[in-house]
Length: 136
Length: 136
Image 1 (tube, rainbow over the protein chains, first blue to last red):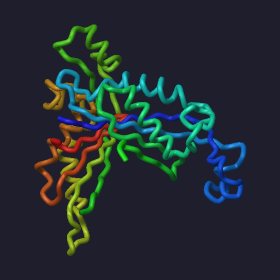
Image 2 (cartoon, rainbow over the protein chains, first blue to last red):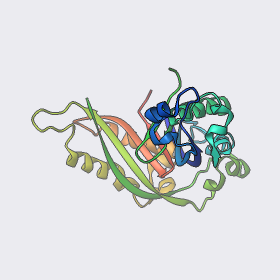
Image 3 (cartoon, chains in turn yellow, blue):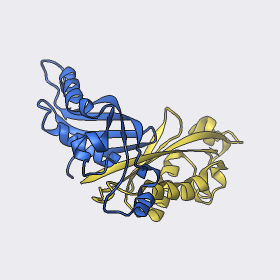
Image 4 (spheres, rainbow over the protein chains, first blue to last red):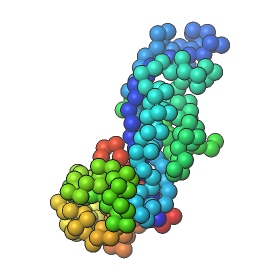
């Protein structure tokens, strides 16, 4: 029997949505106040959904301790209380929450192999959330 | 096709223990959940049904009937109970959130006469939930 398990995590980071090749005016037109020169921050809520057969001996899809350890080490350790624009993942792409969702998905896909990674959902504010499930 | 979700809450105690494991193994796999004195949670259950909207009533399902079925089949059996000791499904199966979602699905699937069960979501904590969609 296959079940989906979702765990929620919180981290805080700053970013600025801005592209060097655009003029200030163009950046302002595309990104609005998100392109303010000194950046701003969010408390992000990350939901990670994994799926798999429920193990008959443990009753679990995967051990939560393993998932927590991977997310804390690879995601929170990397992105909590940092400026996303300074992270290697965003030297050549804008740290929108869309891009951040995709980055997080690919990092977790690489480091968490105990269950199938179904989805990464990222809330930037209570009003905005983004989902990435891999693929196109 | 329209999806309708009903939310309800129940409180129950449980522990995780596989009699085929040594005490050490139980402790390693289940951590503090293996404490045989048990512990409890306030669970939130979301049941999603799907169907066509009845042109006469404008309903996917009669909510009163859904509530009665939920109360009778799920809440009466689980609310303020010790899952390991009082709920037949868990006399031999570990009452993880995964198995709880499956057990609730099995309890509901044949009882819903007017709509089709789509998803059972069980929150053990605000940051941890399991989805079950039936046999996939």
